[in-house]
Image (cartoon, rainbow, N blue to C red; front, side):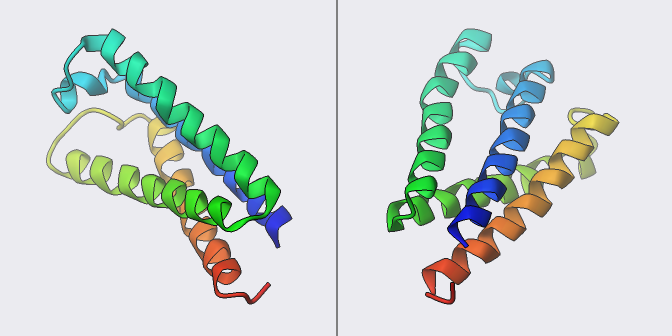
Length: 126
């Protein structure tokens, strides 16, 4: 089951990384009033991307730390979907393109599946 989790984690990471690329297009630092403009936004992503990729390594190794990273990544995806959907419903024009919505919905679906698979592994049902 760890092999399945690895591939789901990888797919979800690709969707989330693409969301972050899309976030640069929509100037997310302005939307959330983050300091530093594009430079600050990019600097913030060095540790975030390291965290995501390190989590993939830990999932591949099959230990409990990988499961923790998996839950954090899945929760991040659900959070991103929720926040951006709420902003769109409030009239925000960001993340309203077809591709932005595809990425957000794909992230929600993959994050939900990832949460379930991780929970099964955490509970020892593998």
